[in-house]
Length: 177
Image: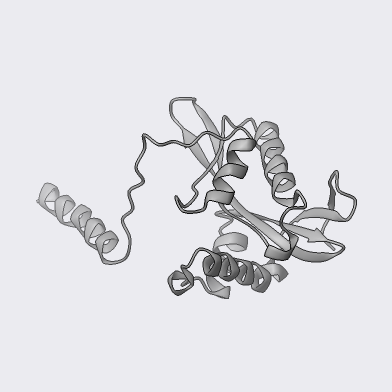
């Protein structure tokens, strides 16, 4: 039985996910993707999550339960700031079911992650937010979050990732010759 973490809201508890939660996590990921109009982009499988979250321990998940029913989750992992010389927590996903929004659950989850960051001696807690998601942007600003407008996110994936990786092998072969 997972250990429940009490919050300031009596009927709302948090807990760290366990391997038996993989289907629930995948369901939350899909619900979030649907909200973000990106459901067709979800390629994660139950096996992917088992391996990445529980075997390789690449990220952690917090499950939020309201009256013993799962109503949200946060998936996060550590990154590192060279400028601070400290780790940080990067929040990949935060999702609360639509019917449960407005009760302060998202704020409680973010506050817990901030407390975790402080306990783990991290220098920051950060995340991305879609530009069109005005309700979330306003919510984050009310918490004291600052948008990093001067930064642009770059991504290499799929064939471009494979091609870039091949460049290393090709350059290494030339050097070895």
